[in-house]
Image 1: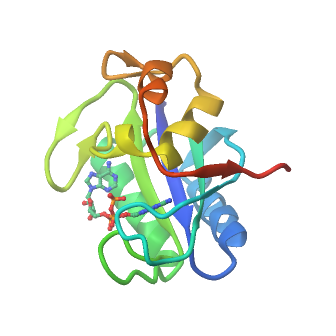
Image 2 (image 1 turned 90 degrees about the horizontal axis):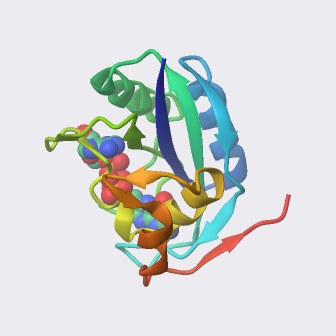
Image 3 (image 1 turned 180 degrees about the horizontal axis):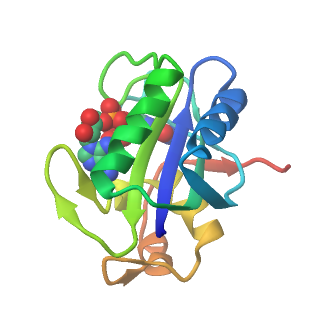
Length: 157
Ligand SMILES: Nc1ncnc2c1ncn2[C@@H]1O[C@H](COP(=O)(O)OP(=O)(O)OP(=O)(O)O)[C@@H](O)[C@H]1O
Ligand SMILES: Nc1nc2c(c(=O)[nH]1)N=C(CO)CN2
Protein backbone atom coordinates (compact mmCIF):
# COMPACT_ATOMS: atom_id res chain seq x y z
CA UNK A 1 0.00 0.00 0.00
CA UNK A 2 1.26 3.45 -0.90
CA UNK A 3 0.61 6.62 1.10
CA UNK A 4 -0.98 9.42 -0.94
CA UNK A 5 -2.37 12.88 -0.30
CA UNK A 6 -5.31 14.12 -2.36
CA UNK A 7 -6.94 17.55 -2.59
CA UNK A 8 -10.72 17.75 -3.00
CA UNK A 9 -12.58 20.94 -3.92
CA UNK A 10 -16.08 22.03 -4.87
CA UNK A 11 -17.84 25.35 -5.44
CA UNK A 12 -21.10 24.32 -7.11
CA UNK A 13 -24.24 22.83 -5.59
CA UNK A 14 -24.13 21.28 -2.10
CA UNK A 15 -20.38 21.54 -1.71
CA UNK A 16 -20.13 19.65 1.60
CA UNK A 17 -22.25 16.78 0.24
CA UNK A 18 -20.12 16.73 -2.92
CA UNK A 19 -16.89 16.33 -0.91
CA UNK A 20 -18.46 13.59 1.22
CA UNK A 21 -19.74 11.73 -1.85
CA UNK A 22 -16.29 11.94 -3.46
CA UNK A 23 -14.72 10.48 -0.31
CA UNK A 24 -17.25 7.62 -0.36
CA UNK A 25 -16.28 6.75 -3.93
CA UNK A 26 -12.55 7.12 -3.15
CA UNK A 27 -12.95 4.62 -0.31
CA UNK A 28 -13.72 1.87 -2.85
CA UNK A 29 -10.03 1.90 -3.86
CA UNK A 30 -8.25 3.24 -0.78
CA UNK A 31 -8.25 3.43 2.94
CA UNK A 32 -8.66 7.04 4.02
CA UNK A 33 -6.65 7.49 7.21
CA UNK A 34 -6.87 11.27 7.79
CA UNK A 35 -9.30 13.97 6.68
CA UNK A 36 -8.65 17.67 7.28
CA UNK A 37 -11.27 20.10 8.49
CA UNK A 38 -13.45 21.71 5.84
CA UNK A 39 -12.09 25.06 4.65
CA UNK A 40 -13.95 27.84 2.84
CA UNK A 41 -11.40 29.24 0.42
CA UNK A 42 -11.13 32.25 -1.82
CA UNK A 43 -11.03 31.21 -5.50
CA UNK A 44 -7.60 31.05 -7.10
CA UNK A 45 -6.81 31.42 -10.80
CA UNK A 46 -10.20 32.72 -11.83
CA UNK A 47 -11.62 35.03 -9.20
CA UNK A 48 -15.13 35.80 -10.50
CA UNK A 49 -16.74 32.73 -8.94
CA UNK A 50 -18.03 31.49 -5.59
CA UNK A 51 -15.66 30.53 -2.80
CA UNK A 52 -14.70 26.85 -2.71
CA UNK A 53 -15.00 24.25 0.00
CA UNK A 54 -11.70 22.34 0.21
CA UNK A 55 -10.29 19.41 2.14
CA UNK A 56 -7.15 17.28 1.96
CA UNK A 57 -7.10 13.55 2.73
CA UNK A 58 -4.34 11.09 3.53
CA UNK A 59 -4.97 7.60 2.16
CA UNK A 60 -3.33 4.25 1.46
CA UNK A 61 -3.90 2.60 -1.91
CA UNK A 62 -2.60 -0.23 -4.06
CA UNK A 63 -3.14 1.81 -7.23
CA UNK A 64 -0.07 2.83 -9.21
CA UNK A 65 0.25 6.58 -9.96
CA UNK A 66 -1.40 6.51 -13.41
CA UNK A 67 -4.11 4.16 -12.14
CA UNK A 68 -4.72 6.58 -9.28
CA UNK A 69 -5.05 9.49 -11.74
CA UNK A 70 -7.56 7.49 -13.82
CA UNK A 71 -9.46 6.57 -10.67
CA UNK A 72 -9.62 10.23 -9.51
CA UNK A 73 -11.00 11.09 -12.94
CA UNK A 74 -13.52 8.20 -12.58
CA UNK A 75 -14.70 9.74 -9.31
CA UNK A 76 -15.22 13.08 -11.09
CA UNK A 77 -17.02 11.34 -13.98
CA UNK A 78 -19.20 9.30 -11.64
CA UNK A 79 -20.27 12.56 -10.02
CA UNK A 80 -20.98 13.94 -13.50
CA UNK A 81 -18.41 16.64 -13.00
CA UNK A 82 -19.63 19.99 -14.17
CA UNK A 83 -16.64 22.08 -15.18
CA UNK A 84 -16.67 25.31 -17.11
CA UNK A 85 -13.45 27.18 -17.78
CA UNK A 86 -9.89 26.47 -16.59
CA UNK A 87 -9.68 27.16 -12.85
CA UNK A 88 -13.43 27.94 -13.01
CA UNK A 89 -16.45 26.60 -11.13
CA UNK A 90 -16.89 22.85 -10.68
CA UNK A 91 -18.99 20.54 -8.52
CA UNK A 92 -15.97 18.34 -7.76
CA UNK A 93 -12.23 18.32 -8.34
CA UNK A 94 -9.91 15.57 -7.11
CA UNK A 95 -6.19 16.20 -7.52
CA UNK A 96 -3.20 14.07 -6.56
CA UNK A 97 -0.82 16.10 -4.38
CA UNK A 98 1.77 13.51 -3.31
CA UNK A 99 2.36 9.79 -3.86
CA UNK A 100 4.90 8.49 -1.33
CA UNK A 101 8.14 10.27 -2.33
CA UNK A 102 7.57 9.50 -6.00
CA UNK A 103 7.98 12.29 -8.54
CA UNK A 104 6.96 12.54 -12.19
CA UNK A 105 6.86 15.54 -14.48
CA UNK A 106 4.59 14.90 -17.44
CA UNK A 107 1.66 16.95 -18.68
CA UNK A 108 -0.77 14.12 -17.99
CA UNK A 109 0.57 13.62 -14.45
CA UNK A 110 2.86 15.79 -12.37
CA UNK A 111 3.66 14.79 -8.79
CA UNK A 112 4.13 16.65 -6.51
CA UNK A 113 1.15 18.62 -7.90
CA UNK A 114 2.72 21.51 -9.86
CA UNK A 115 0.76 24.31 -8.17
CA UNK A 116 0.41 22.97 -4.65
CA UNK A 117 3.19 25.08 -3.11
CA UNK A 118 1.41 28.32 -4.10
CA UNK A 119 -2.03 27.30 -2.87
CA UNK A 120 -3.19 28.05 0.66
CA UNK A 121 -6.32 25.96 -0.05
CA UNK A 122 -3.99 22.95 -0.34
CA UNK A 123 -1.20 23.78 2.12
CA UNK A 124 -3.32 24.85 5.09
CA UNK A 125 -5.44 21.64 5.26
CA UNK A 126 -2.40 19.53 4.37
CA UNK A 127 -0.40 21.08 7.23
CA UNK A 128 -3.32 20.36 9.58
CA UNK A 129 -3.09 16.60 8.93
CA UNK A 130 0.66 16.30 8.18
CA UNK A 131 2.64 19.04 9.97
CA UNK A 132 5.98 17.24 9.57
CA UNK A 133 5.61 16.55 5.85
CA UNK A 134 8.40 17.26 3.38
CA UNK A 135 7.38 18.47 -0.09
CA UNK A 136 10.37 17.62 -2.20
CA UNK A 137 13.03 18.34 0.42
CA UNK A 138 11.27 21.34 1.97
CA UNK A 139 9.33 21.14 5.24
CA UNK A 140 5.71 22.14 4.69
CA UNK A 141 5.95 24.53 7.66
CA UNK A 142 8.66 26.55 5.84
CA UNK A 143 6.62 26.74 2.62
CA UNK A 144 3.56 27.85 4.53
CA UNK A 145 5.51 30.50 6.47
CA UNK A 146 6.53 32.26 3.27
CA UNK A 147 3.19 31.84 1.48
CA UNK A 148 1.24 34.94 0.52
CA UNK A 149 -1.81 32.98 -0.48
CA UNK A 150 -5.53 33.46 -0.80
CA UNK A 151 -7.81 33.63 2.22
CA UNK A 152 -8.86 30.36 3.82
CA UNK A 153 -11.30 29.93 6.70
CA UNK A 154 -11.44 26.75 8.73
CA UNK A 155 -14.99 25.66 9.54
CA UNK A 156 -15.62 24.30 13.02
CA UNK A 157 -17.17 20.77 13.05
N1 LIG B 1 -1.16 15.71 -9.83
C1 LIG B 1 -2.22 15.76 -10.68
N2 LIG B 1 -3.47 15.53 -10.23
C2 LIG B 1 -4.53 15.59 -11.07
N3 LIG B 1 -4.44 15.88 -12.39
C3 LIG B 1 -3.21 16.12 -12.88
C4 LIG B 1 -2.06 16.07 -12.06
N4 LIG B 1 -0.96 16.34 -12.84
C5 LIG B 1 -1.41 16.56 -14.07
N5 LIG B 1 -2.76 16.43 -14.13
C6 LIG B 1 -3.53 16.61 -15.35
O1 LIG B 1 -4.21 17.85 -15.28
C7 LIG B 1 -5.33 17.77 -16.14
C8 LIG B 1 -6.34 18.84 -15.79
O2 LIG B 1 -6.87 18.56 -14.53
P1 LIG B 1 -8.06 19.43 -13.96
O3 LIG B 1 -9.14 19.54 -14.97
O4 LIG B 1 -8.42 18.87 -12.61
O5 LIG B 1 -7.32 20.85 -13.85
P2 LIG B 1 -7.78 22.04 -13.01
O6 LIG B 1 -8.44 21.47 -11.79
O7 LIG B 1 -8.57 23.00 -13.84
O8 LIG B 1 -6.46 22.77 -12.58
P3 LIG B 1 -5.49 22.38 -11.38
O9 LIG B 1 -4.81 21.11 -11.80
O10 LIG B 1 -4.56 23.54 -11.30
O11 LIG B 1 -6.29 22.20 -10.12
C9 LIG B 1 -5.83 16.36 -15.96
O12 LIG B 1 -6.45 15.88 -17.12
C10 LIG B 1 -4.59 15.56 -15.60
O13 LIG B 1 -4.15 14.74 -16.67
N1 LIG C 1 -9.95 28.19 -3.56
C1 LIG C 1 -9.85 27.35 -4.59
N2 LIG C 1 -9.55 27.83 -5.81
C2 LIG C 1 -9.46 26.98 -6.86
C3 LIG C 1 -9.66 25.60 -6.68
C4 LIG C 1 -9.99 25.12 -5.39
O1 LIG C 1 -10.19 23.89 -5.17
N3 LIG C 1 -10.06 26.03 -4.38
N4 LIG C 1 -9.55 24.75 -7.73
C5 LIG C 1 -9.23 25.19 -8.90
C6 LIG C 1 -9.09 24.17 -9.95
O2 LIG C 1 -8.27 24.50 -10.90
C7 LIG C 1 -9.01 26.61 -9.21
N5 LIG C 1 -9.15 27.46 -8.07
